[in-house]
Amino acid sequence: MKIAILGNGGREHAIAYKISKSPKVKKIFCLPGNGGTRNIAKNVDLEINDFKKVGEFVDKFKIDLVIVGPEKPLVNGIVDFLKKKKLKFLVLIKKFLN
Image 1 (cartoon, one colour):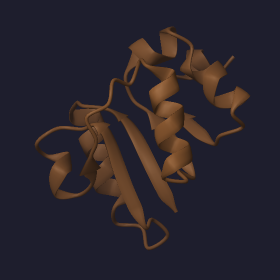
Image 2 (cartoon, rainbow, N blue to C red):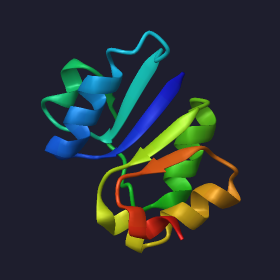
Image 3 (cartoon, rainbow, N blue to C red):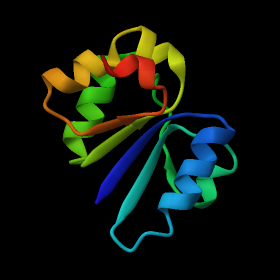
């Protein structure tokens, strides 16, 4: 499984660390990631609120699951964008699942 984690904070680092322990996970990308995530994932310098670029990245690397950490892309509509593209995703803030 290839996973993309959106965000660059401690929460995203903790998620990357934990899922890196799963034998089902083949590759983790952190967009954009941070100094800690670079040791357990591939950091990608990408603006996570530019949904077109996120979509192109997900398509190019055949990402199986997108995990959205920060609120800003959620407020900006990334859930609708991911649904429209029929991508599997996980958000960490329940109120954005409606």
